[in-house]
Amino acid sequence: MMDKRESDDGDTLKDQNTKRRALFRAGISEVGKPENTSWRNLGSHEPVISGQSDPWGGFGTCLVPTNTPDGATEPRGRDGTRSPRVLTPRERGTPGRASSMKRSRVNEIIREGDAFIRSFGFVLPPFAYWSPEELRDKRPLIGGIVGARLGWDITDYGQGRFDELGLFLFTVRNGSEADLKRGGGMCYAEKIMISRQDQISPMHRHIVKAEDIINRGGGVLALKLFNSDAEGNIDHETDVEVATDGLVRRQKAGDVLRLNPGESVTLMPGDWHAFWGEGGDVLIGEVSTVNNDLTDNIFAEPIGRFSEIEEDEPPLHLLVSDYPTWFA
Image (cartoon, rainbow, N blue to C red; front, side, top):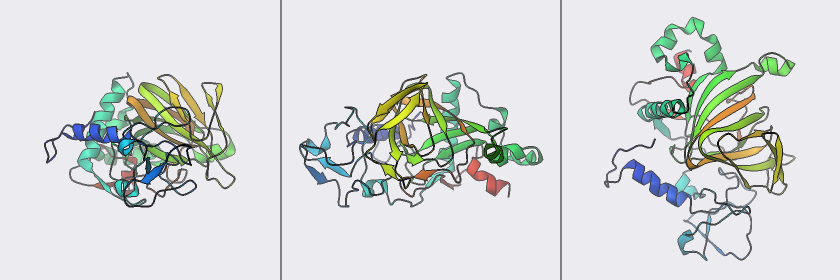
């Protein structure tokens, strides 16, 4: 699924992504003070320490162990497994600073994503394939689509590195917050998502939404989990309990839960989670209570939920974040 265009130095972007992912995998997985390990700064910036704001939500400090050659080995978490590498502030950019995605890249991701989804026998609803002009012509008929923000959602969280920090989403259905408040009616939502190999969806929690995250196929879906403390911040101390297909699992704060194809986890409001694909791209199903991506995503770092788009070519299909502009 990766881009095969050539860069100035002759490497394809696929090659560059492979190299980046190899580096990405060679990092640290834990926040805190591991025993029998000495540390040095990676880069010129101050490290993020436990309890400070971190877009990776506790994947680790911006340090590498000095008892390995430039962090070349693969440090492990408490569960003995590997987690994606934590970038330095210099590498990941200034938190909260918006970087744009080119519309051509968004169009390409949509085509790739649709092909990946179809490879599992899942087909998106007809409105997914309407052109922007068709949607505009049908505006009097599509209040339910626009109002519920159904449709395509490609995000790099405003950081400009989709292959490393991003997510593909399509909201298939979404109920009414009024129904949810009164406890009856359409209180549910459904999304189909793609988490690429080693592509982080950053640490966040929800205020209202409860959700089942389901591995529908592909690689292994890895989720790093924390509880919330009394103030709603990440609790780095208490064990986490989650239901996985009806069975309760208990694990240490910050340990990684891995879901094979067919497996799922139920996350409740306040459960901090970040996730990525391992061993390949992952098709993800999300079944939840009513979804509001404008108000119900609390990130560990003040990053954006939606991408800024640079219009270098016409949109293949509109994103949900395009609706306010096209249907003002």
